[in-house]
Length: 184
Image (cartoon, rainbow, N blue to C red; front, top):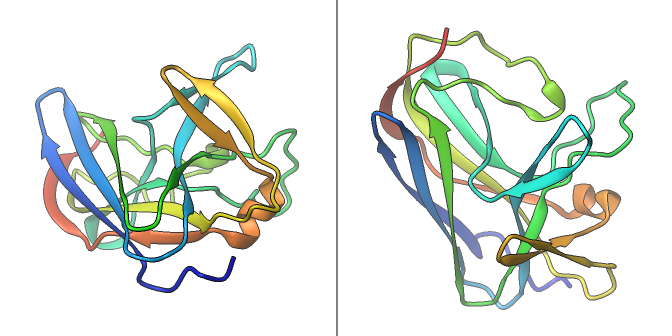
C-alpha cells in the first residue's frame, strides 16, 4: 500500500452511437507500480433478490450543460437512508503497467439510472451534448479480505464496503462531443 500515485491510472473511451444504442469501449491504463482494484462490474438485482453481474452496465445521468455522465464505481449510501445491502461494484485487478478493457452499453434514447434509485439531478433534455466516463479504483491492499465470485466466464472480486468507500478514487475522461437523444 502507498505505492499508487496521482496520475498513475488513466481512462479512455471510444463512443459509438447506433440506431439500437450507444456503446463505449473503455481502457484503463496503469502507468504505476501498484496493482489496483477496478470497480467496473456492476450488478442488477432481480425481484427475488438474486444478483447478476452485468459487465456492460453503468449508472448514467445528465449533468449541467448537456453533459451525460456514465459511471462505474462504489457509491455512498445516501444520507439518512438505511439499506440492507449497499450497492457495491465488484472489482477486477489491474496489474502494474497493464491495461484493462471493458464496455458500456446504453439504450438508443438515453435514460437516467442512478444508484439506490436516486432521482436524477436534472430532468432529461432533448439530447445530450457530450459524454463523460468515470470509474472507481483503489490500490490493492493484501490485508483486506477479498471474496472471489464466478460471474459468467470471469471471476470478480467482492470487497468490504467500508474499506471501498475509504480507499476509492475516481478516474474520468474529458467530455467528448456526442449528440444523442434522451427519453423524455
